Length: 237
Image (cartoon, rainbow, N blue to C red; front, side, top):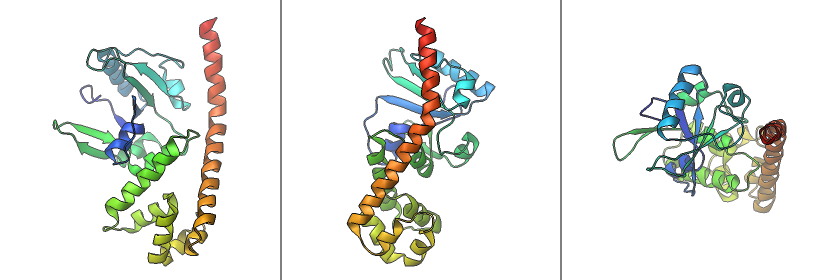
């Protein structure tokens, strides 16, 4: 991707590894800018990786713009079998231009750079119907909190209050930062349980919040799944 100057952001499990929330991942997932010049560079990169499309939908801009992921399988000897998934639109997540402006850029051991989805955007992207994503959100948030707890800013504090999924940490913040917590209650009512130190009611409220997001994600994917089924039928016939 870097060699061919593809404007993209690493997302998914491999991005979580970089942020200290280790997750085993067989895939490389990318958010990409779905513009003609960038997609042309992506095609060049995929050609070098010897990575054809392996499922529906086909590699077309219209499917990316509707929120589909497009799947490729690498056949190059140095990465044979690696799956590459690309998306340009995700539920509840801002446009690529905004994600790019907030990106995290890391320098790797070989001196190359890797652009990652920023942690707040990665957390939003992980709010799916998949079982494995919710423990990952919790680990991402805990890792971010422990990394910056000695360097608190108003933005980080609001992020923790609105996204942390660990009851004990929310209660600790409620004890140490009562004013910001009360200010955020209207956005996240379960913080009321944190203020009162009610662990079990808070954990139940966190579960309800998760179930609501899972249901919203299932609803979001319904028309996309119908479209995929129709494409599979067409391909088989």
